[in-house]
Image (cartoon, rainbow, N blue to C red):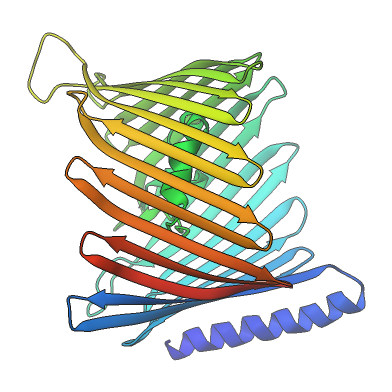
Length: 391
């Protein structure tokens, strides 16, 4: 780590420890955690790599601190430092990333005034290469307000920054994200948590605007997300649907309009839950690759089925292509019998077996010990083990 990075870490840790002693003396809640993951990855037949990631987190009333450090056989790889202050109506956050040299610094300030959220993000990023650094600055302004009738307005404006939707979880269509809970669960089951950041580009000029209106009232699901760039309108995603309470049933249609004001995609969703069973259907239509009289053609179909009962969770997803031929299947099994938990994910495509992921963990007091392995048709692709400690 660069010398400046070490001093930042030392300064923050000392500050946290000093603040922690005062907080504990006053009876303020204190918590923290230590996570360590070590991964063995074969390379070809005669080589391998070993990497480790150490995460330290501390939390006091109104203050959070987290640092994540990555190492491999080649040495130091990355360092991410996050600090947050909650001052009531004002929240301040700082994120610094070394990868392995300095690559990112984000200072965020959010102010909540009578239900209106005002946010300011100041960004400094190295958009060059490690050999030739090129630092650029970006600014993002955020406004969010919710009216009592269930209408939410969100705007993001970026100067020298794009991919602004990452500031709101990377969610381009909010209701689709809710309906796709089973699919997203499979996506995230064995994937490490991803730190979503906007992209800083050269020059501090207007680059992107995201405007979102979202309404959820009386069972109606309605949202519109519109993107603008420096040339004008670039994209819009319109969601419209209805949610029934008994049994829980959601019908949703999603329309995507491109910069030429042409409909480029149409997605239809059905999400039904009856007791311990949840079923989701996704039907996709997209514009043809060659000009045709029909603006949209069938492009795919997905079915997902989930069952949750007494600590056991089963999820299966089957995907079909534009000819309604089998394309992919994923199947997960999760079992929790305290203090042991086991999870597996199996994937197939039209050619056969693709991969298998298995994880097992046991909780002993406040410590969770776990191991994880991944396989493909060629054998083992990675093996991880580690622990999670909470206090």
